[in-house]
View 1: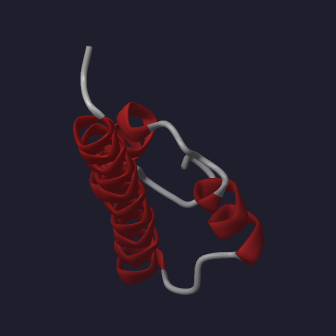
View 2 (view 1 turned 30 degrees about the vertical axis):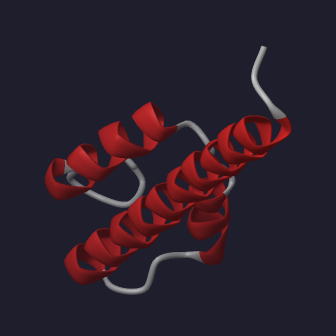
Length: 76
């Protein structure tokens, strides 16, 4: 059975991992919006809101790839 210090350490590591994941997701969202903006001009706020509501890392990574090849904002 782990001691108190070990428990605190593990909880701290888990919090750090979750914070890192949130940072990666936020950066990926910003990148998607930036790619779309560079390709198509101003990204509508509704599109930005939809992207910012996504919290699944795999979905965000897939959208980032698609942002490079999509033909229009309507397809995104």
